[in-house]
Image (cartoon, rainbow, N blue to C red; front, side, top):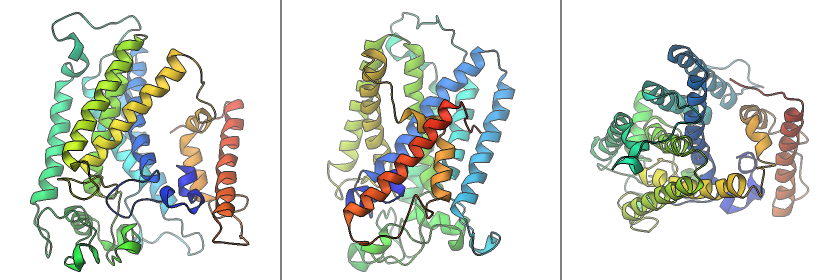
Length: 383
């Protein structure tokens, strides 16, 4: 995420897609959401197993969510040279804000039904034992499916003034310029209605290619529903690790099956095309096909990492392990110091991919080194 945010060498595949489709940059944030869901399952189970009460754990969840939201507001509204923050143009949605709210919903949902699994606990044999990690938590699935039905209903049935129902396009000159002010359809409309135009992102990725003129926030309200769904799929991965602890074949086979199932759903929703499907893959909208596609990839990637790290023990996770131990510090730090030396300097040739790449790789490497040194000193910024 740090490398992509710093510019990714100015290569097109390290920039976010203008609208439908995927680039490498579009993979990072949803995978972070997914693995956050996995960590929720593991951490809550550990807290309860150590005897922590659910009320105490809930207090920690609420405090952590609040801090994530607050830090997010501060980070994306720096105004260092313009004086104090002004409510008049304060951007409310953002990456950390979405992570905070997603964490809150998924953690509370898990806490309501979580059980402290002892280290020796295994699933009981029954005709449905292969699905017990799902069936035991059926109320959670009802809640998530209800959320997804809400997203679908609002996206395709909500009346948006001046726009056709179910519009998923970029507005501007897209769709032959027929709907110039309809960027994001219902998602954009809800943000404008509830947050106001001045409090959402003013320079969406669609503005260059599609010449859109209206504000649109990729971390808006409606898309947060699907980020919750993605975190919940990550939560399911965590439950698999807990229920089938040390049963490598069981764990890997379930990761593989989840990946295949979600891939099939994505193929149906998109018709295996960029623009012609029922619901295109779209990071700006956080469309349901975006969630199923990226979750498909996430389960397959988790399978590969699990095999390399836990089964074969060929890899320790380094150097990615070190920033992961101080992820909030690294994220906040790279945002705050983005325009300062040695993370950025004046280039001789601003059009040179090589010079941009060197700058962005050096800046990212510095944060890896910082996180490694902090790890060695056992210094961790936890919220």
